[in-house]
Image (cartoon, rainbow, N blue to C red):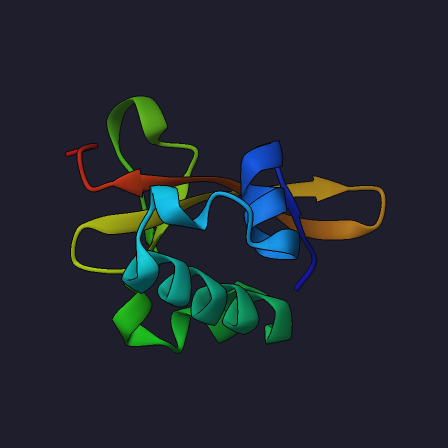
Length: 100
């Protein structure tokens, strides 16, 4: 599935592993595993097949976004969009599970 990073720091983490110490080894490892799943997916249905990711729509202020579980404490916040080339997953942030 096509994806882009909204945050330059997340893009640097993905491409150059810059800022990995900020999150810790377990979160960074999980981030790369989830990104591999996202990259290999054709669409959201392929991501939903991985029940351990808990791909879910958020509520409240974040109702236009979705989350993917990285660890028990951290989530990857994403947003589904459409551009001229089709569907796109916008990677927003790695977030501690505080949005409830």
